[in-house]
Image (cartoon, rainbow, N blue to C red; front, side, top):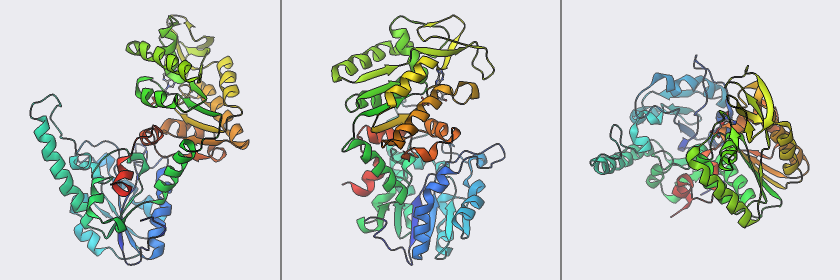
Length: 416
Ligand code: AMP
């Protein structure tokens, strides 16, 4: 079933959204992108004459109640965004009465799903190395099914619209789908858009295809990097992972971030790029700092000749030009991970150069997909959000989808 074919009139729809929004110390929302992302689906349900039960996680409460991660804090914002009354159920597993009382045209927001360990389905308080772990996991999987069944019992139909968690087989993202027949479960409008954006990048790729991978570590992205080396024409590797590559060739990197146990991985990436005929683009110079702080003293030096006591925090001017030149003329672009410690205002130049070049290429006809919290934050910080083709709400989910992995949140609805 697709959401556009479905008529929600007189139906209660339970919708998994990603309302894991950042909050300040007073519990105020600092970025409501994720709430806005879910609105088309929620509004369609209400406009059809249905009611919606909204469920999400927030942060990592690790199976325990934590008022700092209560979704109650955002109830009012959701109500304002939806323009209909939004009730709040303070216990997501005991919301049957509230769901029953829900009137058509109204919404009910459930408390943080991850207050229950059943949501993620991982046993708590027991190490993987413990001989009793496997048994505990089996028990937990059984209670996860019960938990999912309880959530399902609140509604007539299920909508999965949380792309950010679609790569997780959690109670609310996948297991719950088993309790609805094929005609009563569907992907939401945000999910459909995300899937289409990934499709744009993967099927009938317009070339040149340039990917930019940044961030702090090569280890967390090695899967996607290796995978992209089978797809792209150019791969720009930037940010902190630069220094693992420099070190692998015997460079001096001072105090720069490095993964000394991944030097062979870096060399392997270079080998694979050569074998596949992919142009690998690495930084040459860095803005180095005498401490990890925005106010540190800085200088520019070659990325493989960083003086002792200094660390590379941003791409240098030669690198910035090199990156911009590599992106120019691209027809498909994927960006994940900043090119420097962009959170510090004095170290944004590398990421800004990448973002500007992407915006330019997009204006010249490229399809550009930006994903992962940090690169999205970059694009927003530079005010370029409306100058790229698509900003994904997914980090890990986006990368897994691009790797060609089946996402459990999608498979639960479309698969089998
Ligand atoms: P990731 O979570 O791996 O995508 O990494 C994102 C983080 O990488 C951001 O918080 C950046 O500040 C950080 N980062 C980027 N460049 C560097 C660098 N040269 N040194 C240390 N951290 C960096």
